[in-house]
Image (cartoon, rainbow, N blue to C red):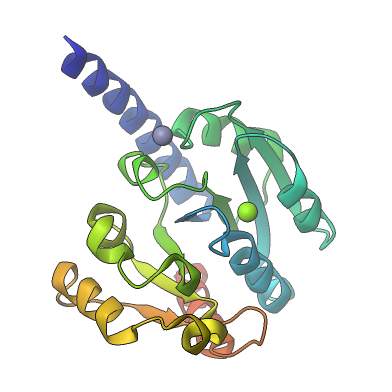
Length: 220
Ligand code: MG
Ligand code: ZN
């Protein structure tokens, strides 16, 4: 019985995600689903993208949090369209609420939509939001064992951003172990960026990657 209920929830979500994908295709929106633990640097990643790309692309942000508008307020300071979703306890975003948010935002064609998911390495990976790209932000502070402990999250990621690399030596983060864990689940196609949003180390190649990706998408 319980299994059936879960299946229905996922099916309903998949239908909503498929609708978003269709709509995004028509309007040439590019949706990036940003996932990761609380405090990994999801908001810092989005802020970095805005700072470096807002003069070139239309950017909008959908902020998911259990409570508060702290992250949305930071984003609003950049003058980009932002909408906060408070899930009131739910530990992941669902496609229905993204559809509603997109509707409310009244977006221009050719807009990049960054969706900051709820901080959690488990269930957000099971809920398709109609995204074009999945980014997992994983901080060195969380430890080098995360790909081993949460393989599904990392397996389903298109891009992995390892953040806070400025503290790697101080905390004894084993980069080889971390990479081995990733390689075990993502044999080919591993897109890993090692960055520190604080010191800006590695940020340039991350920004260049997204610039090239978005530029070719919008030119198509
Ligand atoms: Mg955040
Ligand atoms: Zn959840």
